[in-house]
Image (cartoon, rainbow, N blue to C red; front, side, top):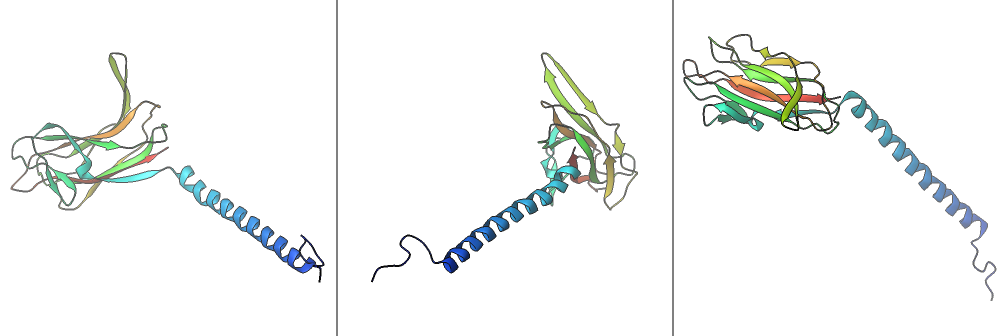
Length: 183
């Protein structure tokens, strides 16, 4: 007995195969559309990242910062601690906004921070920075120092510059975490 449809599928089977193929194309297109829609708000809203205070790099003051639950603190009884808190910015368009969370345990001095964008060109440094923000006195709870935008360029690097006062009455002041949102 000879096959009746040599190299061809019967119409019903061919119809199902075509329908299955169309469904696969439709589902694939819907998946790409969903990814585009889901991805769009995060790009439009900026790419915000939260960093632990322990990411801070000592730039002056006491020789060994105190790390406690990934917060960075000043264990000195008489010297200030100066730290740079690095920010990863892969948009090259600057920072839209940010904050630094601090625990200020010094009754006489405040924790102070500024948001900076710096780059080197030839023998000189250039950049942008925000006005400094300071904690509002001694408090055992987090205080949030908020920052607006800072400009940038494709070769600038971004960071918060912070100063943490010495211990007061055996209590250590800390930077617990910080955040930056790209433009």
